[in-house]
Amino acid sequence: MPVPPQLVRLEPQTGTAFVLLGGARLRIVATESEQVADVALFARYDHADSFSPGRTMDYNERLIPQIGDVLYSNRSTPLARVVADTAGVHDLLLTPCSRVMFERRGQLNHPSCHENLSRALGTFGLGEDDVLATLNVFMDVRVEGNAINVYPPASRVDDYFELQAQTDLVVAMCACSSELTNNGRCKSVGYLIYP
Ligand SMILES: [Zn+2]
Image (cartoon, rainbow, N blue to C red):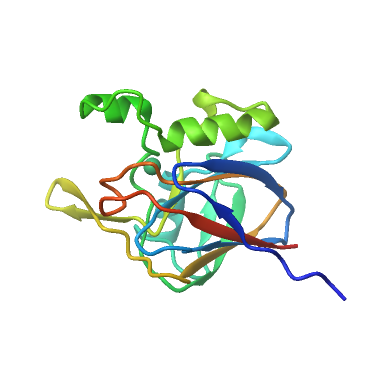
């Protein structure tokens, strides 16, 4: 009997990194409402081939990825496909929150997604300069005129967003560290891997 996958919970303002083999599925689960999960993707055997939100929006011809859409790399490699989604609102426009972003708001030494993802990716020999872009799961970013406005995340408890790897990947994921992005309080997120 196959062992059912276990839900892994990422505590608020923490991150992790792991290998996701081609064909395996990653389900990102809202363990609490209104919390964003930032996800970075790299080809397992060539880390320079990494997730490109720009190519993904270009080839899918939309801002928000939906079921059936492929997430592409900077070299146009299909990295993953969206296979399930109960929330319907995600972001490809903004980079992960960073130490400098918080400094610009006067918040010194604030935890950030960029730092958490970079640290988790250290296991794979990757670091700060490699975390260029993320898929921001459950993040509600709207282009209004020429402004970019962030609204509270669309997720409610037990919502999920699921990707299927199209090739072997290194995945980094974190529970977003920005209070403003997450409607005032940073919370946990969860994930499941279906091998
Ligand atoms: Zn963040």
